[in-house]
Image (cartoon, rainbow, N blue to C red; front, side, top):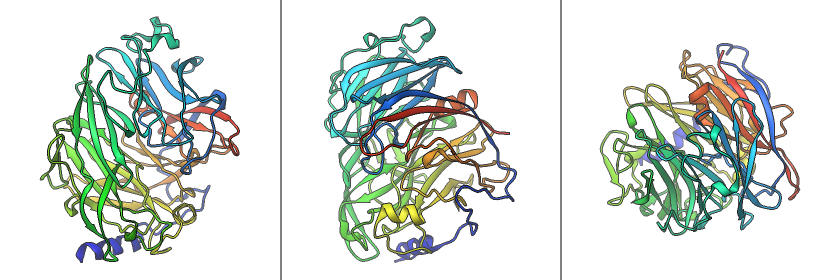
Length: 473
């Protein structure tokens, strides 16, 4: 009963009672760091375009990574008009993009079937996982050394191995959301979901520079959870806001649960997502712990299940809470999470998640204090969209939210991240929906690169671009 009451109170709370109209900034928040657009380059004038699940297959913000930097070169990927998977690189900061067309074409019009990239520094390979949604992955890796000494390496499709349906013979089965993560020891991990939405498990695989091996599943799809309306759900999946290694090697994972029983909802047009949870691992994803430090589960053993002990921000399933938003870790090792939903002051029952989120949805900044408590603040700039927001930190721990359509909101570390201000309104970009960002370039250079695709209609191809911003002032 206490958990239900807390969820209702959280949904109804006005955490920051300041609302800034779309396209404007708060004049009292002048301390927020600025951004400066450096350049905007076109990758492809006719990239594949179709809207599915409110998004584009070339530009879903949950991709890790669609854009990344290594050894002074930047890499990206997309599907072009004929559905071919294209890989591209450029020498930073502003050399021309070189393109390589892989012998693979997107199999289905599903925006989940994104292209994700990863790099294994130990052998200098670029890894590609793509075109999967509850299906075997399409996987490709480059020749050894291709990305470790890029200036001396030619760039073409011939530098990549064959398209596989396994990880070099390691069969993952049907998966979704492949995301590459680099450990502090420079090993490459792959996070993925098996099973289906509201009835699936998260798993990990690891590449040591020579071979892949499965570490196993670390979340459970089963267990009972009862909604405020008294309906019980017995299946679910954990939707990750990310997997992020911080200083000291701790692996952070914030998430929301999605229930399998739609009866937990007040209306059929909502989302069964509820609560923001958090777990962490200090042994590279083998053992997972609750926010209080207690054992939550083990990878390949007893998995992490639904439990009040994991919840850091309670919310019932009637507010259109978005899954797979984003997280980042600051230089002190504190995890920060962006979540978005319809606050209770607008409605206690979302009846159409897309329409209601666009009309009433708000973004919230949630972060862990040094004493283990969590602070949550509403961002006073309305997203005005169904989609997700990315959070990025510069090297001074100032925070930047890259919202749908490419708008950027910032807050300073000096203010305790309270002076949120719209610092880039994306006028003229004409971006559709979500965008993706290059975290590795921010860490290396203090430059934020944003991958976005221009709005089109129907299935008419449209240009896809990378915009670069200097962060901080």
